[in-house]
Amino acid sequence: MGQQADRTRGKRISSQAISGGNQSSPGIPGGNYPFDLQCKLLEAESLNEVLSIAASMMARVPGTVGAWIFQRDAGGELVLVQSWNESQTTESAPASEQLGKLIHQRWIAAHRLGQSSTEFARPFSPTDRRDLIVVPMMIGEELVGALAVRRREGATFPYLPEDIVTLATIAALTAQQLQLTLLRDRVGTQEDRTETRQEIVNEVNKHVAHELHDGIVQDMAYMRLRLEMLERMVAQDPEKGAQQASEIREQFNDAIDRLRNTVNELRKPKQQTRGITGRLRDIAGRMAEQPISEKDPAIELDLSEISGVRLEPEVERAVVGIIREAMQNIRKHADASSVHVEVQRRDNMLDVEVRDDGRGIPGEMTSGRDMHFGIHQMQELAEEMGGSLSIEGASEAGTRVLASIPLVPADKES
Image (cartoon, rainbow, N blue to C red; front, side, top):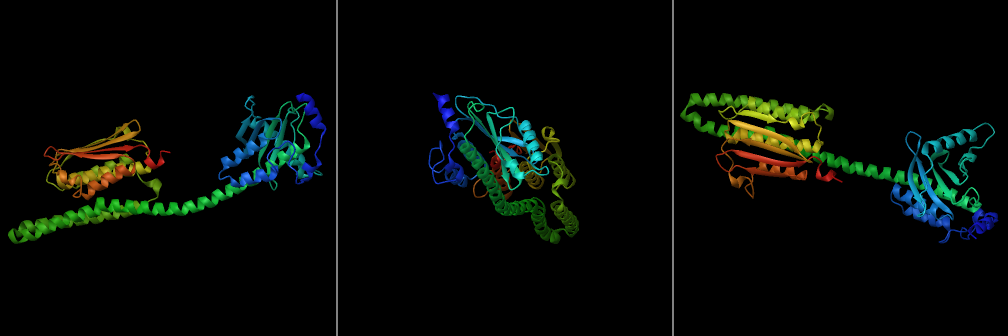
């Protein structure tokens, strides 16, 4: 009975469907098919939605057991981007390479002398696959992709002319909507870029603030303290006061040099900046060259697990910022004889430890309203990445700064 119905249906041609009358397309439920398709496509908000709607509409053409959408990539190759199979079948898609060669041959034939290029856009069946219908998707004279459908027993009972018109309509509307969606995404990208520029400016401002605080601001605060001490010393011991003034002058010169270096680093192109291990060694070297206390602390670095590894820029910035701030605090307040810096990888985390054998840090400075600004900054750097920071050492046994930083920042996990 099914084959007889197909034979009868194969002899019938609906002139209304081909001429575009107001009647519903034969065999397609749900009202005016092209209008229904266009409305659905216009509601699509992404390329995936456009492709999904087009595939579902192709599936509604009677007798279809497999439907595939190919899109042309930047290299001109056809790539399968959407497929549909009837639940009872496991149809395999036409090979992209073979389909691409076939369409290319048709393009050459259509552009020969005396031929019309409009022939190229017509639906066709490959010579060796009469059960398949292939429809090029065109924008003007540019090929943007192709649709392919397989009809059950299509070699014996092919699609009706009105079905071919329906498939051609799907191809035309889908190609147009793909183009519109791409243009809309580009407009959205431009708007996103404006927001991104502001985010970059905010990040740069924050980076500059960290650099200034960790460098020149720290040095100036310490030198102000020494100048206050110098005022009292001059009256009591002029000779020692002159010596202190000479040391402070040298520290001012060092601070000016550091400020110049900071400005130069900020002006460097991104690709010229050093890796994380190089930057941490620079921090340790600067601390060894310019100790504030009379002790010359031995500094030990254990960076073997991140040596030569490129981390996410945000992660590098957080790790370097935490270690630099911890080292500055040791340099100025701890009066330590040894410092150990260690960065280890644990699953998807970086464990950062900076410890010293100095005076320790008062507990009230590590939390609450009296939290030291530098400690608050370290905590902020860790938490921005989705990590955590803790400080041990409210005694004379020294201080340990411990931080856990995800290898992938929290805002990039998705």
